[in-house]
Length: 569
Picture: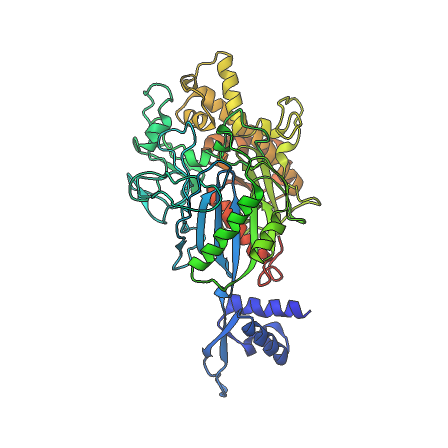
């Protein structure tokens, strides 16, 4: 009961401050001596501070001493470990980000380079605004990358690339001309920076391409050079159809899609395609997690908070996780199986660690800061290299007894005979994912159908999406068919969980209405009418920011100063 009372008092100070002890007693009906004792304890813990006298009451007497919440008293840490990039974000006890770092996920054989100093938020950014990002150690372009490829990270809010395209809401990977220098010396195998020339702005695929150009062979070259008007607003989940030709398909967003022929185990959570294209070696869990801990400590020290207590860490991974044990059960994109992420990070950082998968984290972030609008009952369909879902019930993540709830992509569909990387046959994600897009397009070409894709050597899902946007009939049909399969998945979520809202996230969401319109139509056909009533299907607002923001918010929910009052994930 004392813990409940403490949480009530802290919540009142946090949400209603500045407040006096007397007003807290009136609001909670707790006895004044009880309130005073709790407040003294919170002051001693650094969570609350006195800021001086308030106004004297009409009846006279001494003015009350006002209290306010000390947001910098504790920190929460969000970590998103991806196949190529890892992001960490340090937030205060109110969840506002103080600093963020990004760096390549270390792999064997990479050249060590060091993280750049973190970029610190002088004023906490709003949920909708882009957050400061430290590019961290850079990343060399993968073998065979097209011109204009760039590693994510290293952009500041509000900057613009050529043509005046602002960076607000931009996904990682689209870097306008702008000075991102190369990195210099650091632990754990990170490749040298190679981001691109110029002044540091981030652009959203400025290039509309001339549809008369020979096939699609130049799509990424032209997009990277800003050939023509148009572009993608990733946080809107759509494509700008006003641009000519192949305008506006976001390489960075669709990098998460992956081509056909992805390596073993591809397809659980939609990590960048390069993880499979380039045959990256499995990441050593000890190396990765020790680097994460080192970067967290460096970021905190660089922000001028070396003595601050870490209240909780949210760790988000691309695969199956067991929330109850903190174990990464399987992350094919990293080459991990049965890794005790919680225990390793907790030992390194001296703080409680809570492990979730990317779909769960994205669902939390979209609900609190993005497309969800705090509806509470939300299903996020996470579609990229693979297919999964994050489910929120009354604002709480639904984990299931073993922590693997939401792996909807591994439900078998009668009539589908594609082998799945999970070892089964006929899983939904074999026809509703990035690799599925490429397989279907290749199949159409093999059957003699005419498409501009025939002129693109080794095309991937980005090329198919670009061709569909340009009006290619084969590509458009492939995208629509994948959208219909995703609509089937959405109908399962609607029937099984009866959410108020379905959010489509992951790399495929960036394709926009060419995918989303058939998705919505299929969901309407397959879902039960009573379950469908009032349900809206929206694209992600946060885009690739969702996972790390979700990690911060999950840490906040679990921290002592928050979860007892609001909800527990």
